[in-house]
Image (cartoon, rainbow, N blue to C red; front, side, top):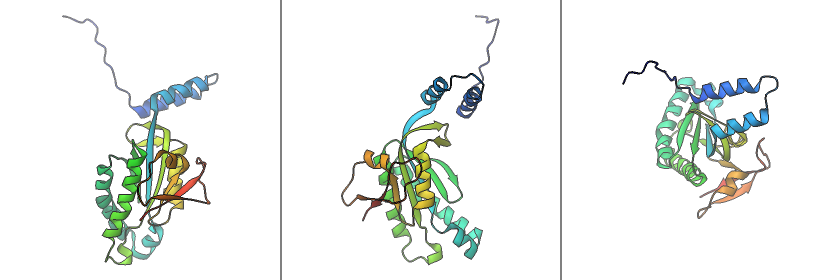
Amino acid sequence: MFMPTAYRIKPTGAEQRLEDLIQERMRAGTDKTALDQRIWDLFGEEWAVMFTDLSGFSRQVVSFGIIHFLQIIYESLRELTPCINRHDGFLLKVEADSMMVVFRRPNSALACALEMQRHLERFNQGRADEELILLCVGLGFGRMLRIGDHEVFGAEVNAASKLGEDIAHAREILVTDQFREAVTLGDGISFQPLTEVPPGARQAWRVLYR
């Protein structure tokens, strides 16, 4: 059958679609409430989000040089990526010594964080102090905007980032109140309230584990 007119459909990525909607939101007279609902309908999803950080980045770079710390980053990715895969996490982004990972289930995110810390405890045995991989973890859970395969945005994202990258110390797992309420605790796991609460969270907690 002959088709006199051909239509070529050009696919639009999630990032471009969001940019178009934000541009529309900036126009005078736009119904921002209705447009915001469209954005949440398109991109809103419920995820557990994990941010990791390696303790002592600046100190080690100054003391041992950037190449030494690049080795530590490489080793951390090699050792921790299998943990993420075993718990069905999606590694969205790696920036310097930090990882951003999302999980469909908070229990999976917590189990992954615990396995990471316990694995590194074994991995670090017998290594020199400057060779230790010391992990900090922040966890959040809730509705957020997931844009393509590389970005998530939301209050729980911001809070988890602050917990993992700024507040947590080596070997700590810190979580938001929403995350704490969503998980089922296993044996030997409990929570301790933090005095410092990041923006976007009602309360924050330290995970106590064996």
